[in-house]
Length: 218
Image (cartoon, rainbow, N blue to C red; front, top):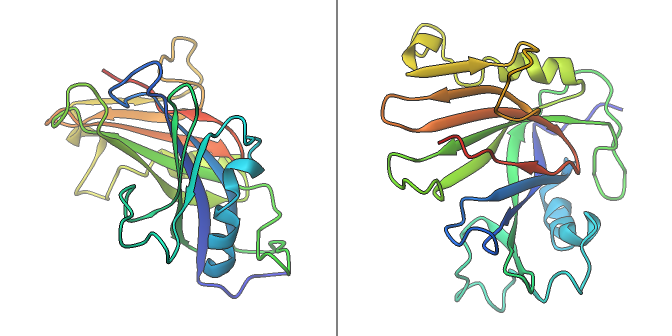
């Protein structure tokens, strides 16, 4: 069954470990599924943290954005759920929109619109050391969705590049995983790069439900 949808909607959760680092630089990202229908994705996002295995005991604060609190919402424009653990970790749930480039057969749950295929995601983490030396100012975005890991890895190698405009030589540092034993950026990181202004970039490949900790590249 091939989806006619031109866009895919992916639920992304982000954990900020304020318990171990009050700056917010320690962050962990998980993907909680990809959908072809935005309304159904938003509905699923309300319970995404529970879907990933968290319980009421884990999350003593759990606030869903809705009509009753939209005017006073202070947890970010794109955040649909804000949660917190007793030990100080904070969670946010949002939805990222990607073009549907999955050619061939994909399997969609008719009721939920969730893709049941084993998907692999390319993530780009940008760490703004040029603005905040602590590394707390960072964001991780979904740059691609693939049906195989090799395809995702191949794409990840080119995510930061733009033809002749942005090349590997455009960066102050460029490290690319080629199965070397001394790779220090984490097993899911395919590319690590540093721009001339000090910004750090990491392009990673993960699967749905996998916990990915954004690396401190300083």
